[in-house]
Length: 88
Image (cartoon, rainbow, N blue to C red):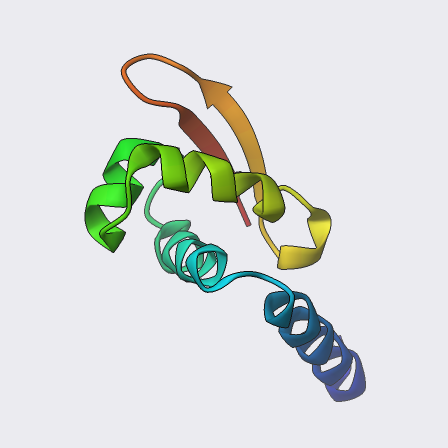
């Protein structure tokens, strides 16, 4: 990828992030920081880390399910808390 392409991609990511709410941005940063360590995330555990309820996490994850945020987010399971499959 050329420097120009990388800069264009970064500015696009910044533009998308500016349309996200503060909670959505916090969740996105958390996922990006941890996607290299694991693939599956429970709403309850994300909420515990960020001081949000599992319901708040689940409600805000839908905004992150677009290709434009740089990670892929897919609702994966529902046992004891919604589980999300996240890949970079």
